[in-house]
Amino acid sequence: MSLIAPTELRARFARSLSALYGTEVPAYTTLVEVSEAVNADVLAARGPEAERLGSIARVTAERHGAIRVGTPDELAQVARIFGACGMHPVGFYDLREANPPIPVVSTAFRPIDGAELAANPFRVFTSLLVVDDRRFFDAATQAQLEEFLGARRLFPDELLHLADLAEKAGGLEPADADRFLELATASFALSSEPVDRAWYDHLQAISSVAADIGGVASTHINHLTPRVLDIDDLYRRMTERGIAMIDRIQGPPLTTKPAVLLRQTSFRALAEPRAFREADGTVVPGELSVRFGEVEARGVALTPAGRALYDERGIDAFPDTEQELHDAGLAYYRRDADGVLQPVVYEDFLPKSAAGIFASNLTSDGTVDAAQRAAARDAAWLREALGRELHDPYALYAAQV
Ligand code: OOG
Ligand code: NI
Figure 1 (tube, rainbow, N blue to C red):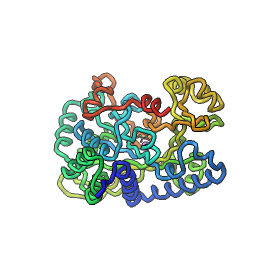
Figure 2: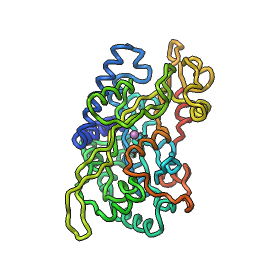
Figure 3: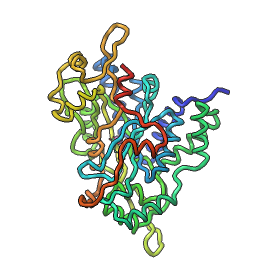
Figure 4: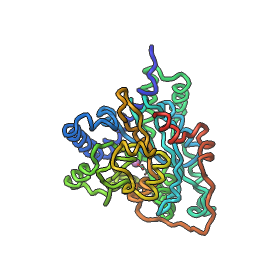
């Protein structure tokens, strides 16, 4: 029997997470419907031009997810599960430098070559709590976090075993693939396990993100993001439907210049029912607002020079045409058989937008003591934790030209 290849595992994984998230967060289904309507209208209005940054099939299926884990071991396990789906860690993001600071460092798991991206670009922004950063956690809280996180198991052995098998063999037998996807999807479902109120509240006072990661015994998808071809239109249509959006679209503002990098917006976190265990042991119903809906539009990937220009001077400093962007060495383009420039899509994230997305979702700024010692984290540290190569996004874009 032929094996189900990583490409198909990834496409099916994205679909099954989408089905799960739709049952958990009904507003997500609305967001997907509105996104599809916007994309159909853009395609009808602009024709083939609308598909320059990805075929409509790719864009319709395209999602990114966000998850958060607590320990380097958990991160290494996540890497095995995504690895089975042909998703590799790309980039290092330090959200502790954001305003307000978030106590995590992150990477994105995604396909890395052009054909795989075209087949299904599913990517997952994955954040790891930095428990030993004293600016957030005192020694007692760090010790409690380590004990709590060390005692939980996010992923069953059977799932990890199937993931390793898939990576080694280059795919899974159909029955194993079904089982792998069932277990992988279930690992990211919202748990009905009661949350320890006192522990959650203790972390929440420091950081909502820390509470979401270290205050509960499992992980979950934080959001799942469809891609749209006109995010301004999407924003208007969602607002018209009475859905409370955050007050802006993150990333480069709307201009008539070529679309670069990434623009994102989201609706606010929804109150979801969760059970709480009180100090006296009783379990009571309650709610938490940590998960939300996000949508994004993608443009051309910028070179290091283009990115520096964007970070220093913003989109207004950019030229008006793709030809000029290319000639100035600001963005990545390849040439098709007719010699026409084709943009290389930006496949990654933006730390400032990510910080804005995290922030839109916080109940408070939390407490940070800047006088305390920071914990050292960099790409080399993350590579060690992952136990596998951490790819440099620029090298991947350059390889696509
Ligand atoms: C991740 C926030 C970052 C994005 O699209 O920039 C992100 C999170 O909330 O866990 O998903
Ligand atoms: Ni996101």
